Length: 268
Picture (tube, one colour):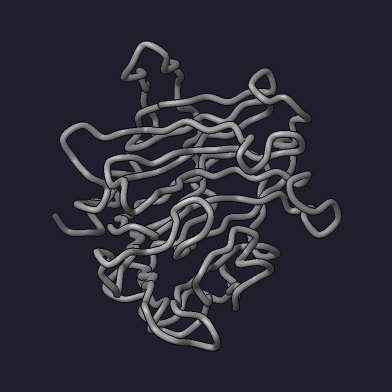
């Protein structure tokens, strides 16, 4: 199917009723259908500088997680081509690190309170790979993390190709104490094809979706500390290598590895 036709069909189908696919999943009606921001990645080259900024380097303590990669803005690690954003993790010696990859964010360029945030992504495979589509509170420079809040729309461990998870971090429930739930495919893998990962976020709730299936809802009743998700957040897209959660790559992890993003869209 022509890619533009396919995207038009997706836009036309944003109003639907979602029924949970297991007994503990909740029912909801999608009402957020006005497209207010998008990146379709249709212009080859670097990511649109009016929409995205780069995080560069190794961060503090491996971005707080003992990650192994050096994030760059090189086209070898991040480029738009053939209608996709491609983030590539490579095994190479680079400025003291053994791996390179990329991370972009919309801080200061697009920050929003509430909405439906979704991305269509094909994920890589291999131990030590840690792609994510996530958000941080816009007030992070004033209050720091985790007081600013973190919404992980999609995280994925490359050695578990059938599962992704969605999480919130806040004061009193961050890191290993975060609030999270896993979504698992049946008879399929996330590295075989594209899937749509999203949240619908409103006052005092965050609903988590994979391919328009609602698999979790988090509310203030679910967190043991302060609810810090009623203010503006910005988006982040990255692929980490190694770190506390996935562990290091092993001899079976093949490099380079690609995370392909077809689009990111925000509705209200």
